[in-house]
Image (tube, rainbow, N blue to C red; front, top):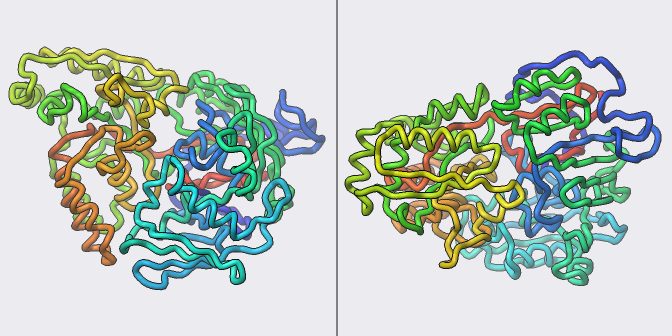
Length: 548
């Protein structure tokens, strides 16, 4: 879920590069407030407030719904997982499990930390730990697929040991305890509140460094230090965290410029000049696991036909989109939807395939040939769904298709940020129970630095369900077979070969149009210091934000 340094030390990230910034003009600018916090937020004198601007609030404060960046920013710090990812993203570190061991191919043990309390002051028990794990498989959980290989859990209350028994070997299980399905909740509270838990009408009780103080829907979420935090609340420099919901990205950038917020991330090319003009803030960027791409809905005509998908793909000038939308922190993708930062198992083979396979660069002649070979040779009309922030890119694609001269018409349907989660994850469906869009302007951030972080989520047929991230609704037995086999392999080279075979099949089927890789960016007030790594999605924690 997040990285919590047990020693609370902070160093400059090696992969991070300083982009721009100005010297601080005031020792009390932004969040380090002697008057009780950032303007507009009440607090105790001398209290340090850290204000985060983000585009949309989380769907809930219940870990069963944690599958968005809004949850990363606003909700994760209220809870803990069994393990954490290291800042580099490739290693695992203790959290609620202070040690762990792989006993054999299908058995893992985790020694659970004793003496931990929830934010309501109640002791965390092994019953809570077991309940939290079993809840993932017993209830509808946005990331339950990560537990597909689990046979059963058992808990030993005397030794404080959780044992995980898998149905079969799973090379990726080692990562799962650092993700949201392995969040520990308080059984009594969750069972008492039922569907209200984590909602505006319910509670949010965890073991994390912060706890929920208030939630004004559509406006603001406030968390404060958890006085029962097992890793010492006095180690936290920030007393109060204010999450300002600012949907419009220009307004969010202006809020940073005016000192209203201390932190914002995923800075777009359109708003970058505004952020660069911030007097008391600094922008950082680093290699990430994030990409931007277009998802075809493979379950609905016309895009249930690969040639129709290719006809549109060949109309898109990806380099123009990279420059226009991604800006200077983005780079063109090749054939794969996953970024080069994740080619760790066999870099040479993955780079060669990514550069040599068909990447669907703009070629109107190939687009014409694909359309002629499709089930709709006389042309078709389709709806592209996008948010306001993505509209410029969508309009560029619309223009590229029009310039092709082909009988293809693209309509733009603008989604509200508040609706994008429901639409993108398949909760909003049409009269036939299918995802509503024909094409979706979207992207992905991997769960971990392993190709399965994209392949299992975005391409595997088992991830096409309500809450699943297979936004293309792509299904291919030919793709699934080598991917499934890769989970059974312990040798990384063999795993890599299996996954490459699967990726080559997906590239040929063209369920997505990869556009660009995104260097992750964030801006932070100069009175704070903080580091991020490629696993931001699970690593983000204000516990690692320090005052200078």
